[in-house]
Amino acid sequence: MIELKNVTKIYDGNVTGVDHLNLTIEDGEFVFLVGESGSGKSTLLKLLMRELTPTEGSITINGKEITKLRRKKVAELRRNMGIVFQDYRLLPKRTVYENVSFALEVIEVPSRKIRRSVPAALNLVGLSHKSKNMPNEISGGEQQRTAIARAIVNNPPVVLADEPTGNLDPRNSQEIMEVLDAINKRGTTVIVATHDRAIVDEMKKRVVHLENGVIVRDSLEGGYDDED
Image 1: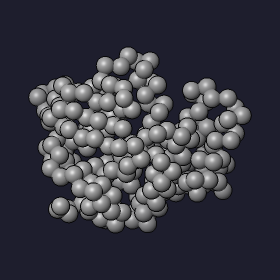
Image 2 (image 1 turned 90 degrees about the vertical axis):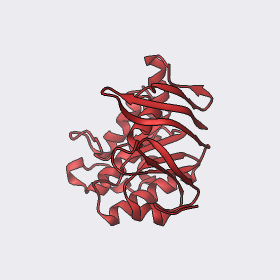
Image 3 (image 1 turned 60 degrees about the horizontal axis):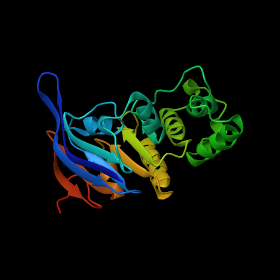
Image 4 (image 1 turned 30 degrees about the vertical axis):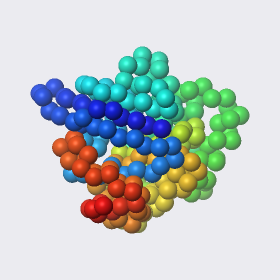
């Protein structure tokens, strides 16, 4: 479970990222974070992955308060999270397979486990047939699916995705969300920050709507603008 209690983040210059946020996300939920640019979506994700620390308040993930973790413990926290970005962040000189395996190599997973885990992750995102391709040889949607495979190859309990369809056309966007939905159905908690109203309206998942760092609506199975 993820729990934020009275969380505020104030940046230099007295700019408020989030303001006295209270939010609970249960294990296995799929949650959309929506709102205009500057509403606090990315700040919230960065707080969850401990890229930022709150000015005040507490954040608990699976029973552990993460706001005061030492650097080594932050690394452990992130190993239990899959993180997906808008811009893919693939290594250009490594194949699809090598991009995914790299996530396991850096945490010194045994090669035998890597040989099992990488094909399973690529199969889940529908890229088994592209494992030997370089990033510049595949489409934007396939690059994002590679990034998702890299994020989930270690079977993290939580996946955080910041605008994962921001660079994609509607068809590829839908395919990416289908992949994330399939990952969620395996029991993984998925939290997606997005501007994509069509996807939010179509998928009917929980929607947390932010404005100026404040939650203005928390709706189960709602659309982007639905009111309870």
